[in-house]
Image (cartoon, rainbow, N blue to C red; front, top):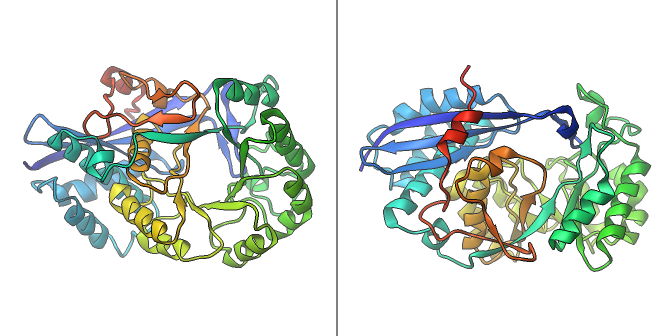
Length: 394
């Protein structure tokens, strides 16, 4: 079998104003995805997704088409490790991090999907197989443009569905000097620091004292801010805090771990490649690693990150904020490893995740678990008519 071509599909869904939402770093007026399709000289193909954190998808698409497709033509697609090394080392001078590694990730996911189809096995079993039941947490609680958004009612709907672990966004604080939102083009969704603490208190009150709660700062806070609200956060019994500071602030994370040892620290979705994650695995201050499979290096890198994390008794939580392809890859990866922390289960409206599948993802009746499909590869079948409906052609 040979690779005969790589196609990319740039998808976009524009939100109506009532659905526009923000986190600490920026605003999401639309959802986008870059799907990657590996074609062969047979009827089989592989599908993947390259994550880009909002960068224009035409840039990453050009990288794949102009740089990686010529590199991989006529190669044996089952030599995945060899192809990964080839892509990585031929772009080392301008790669390592950023859109290049995101492009490699999308290709790598597609190659693994193809391998699963060749072997007639779901990827979680091909990767070793741990459990098709993957714990999940409700991920939402953003800052919305519309006054119609009621956070309490939204959280109650998560509880009613049966979730036991919950995550909301914090950090978009307009009264804090140097906060990233002060540099945003749209600052309409920002709140005060005191209002942010009130949001966390509302989450705790609504889900009850026995539920696990996570807050995600998107790297917007500083150690000074955290020290200011530390006593209040301790009273609210946080289970986990995700990325309060940029991942470069190792001294800040060390002090946080010492000041708040009862809370788990999770990160970093924006980090990439096994060498950088190895440093995080070996750090004593980070409890839960959060790789993004469409950004950090695909299955090839993530399985190595997970294995090294296991040797340090650390868990892996798959970050997933993309389309159905991205979530399927995250789910299959989590189902393959013994040290999986609940996978991120986004509850915002995102038709790129729900509408492009022929069959939806399956969950248990209490929403505690998402079930990894036993179908070959990623275990999903795309509705290509819907893919074309969302495709950007310009």
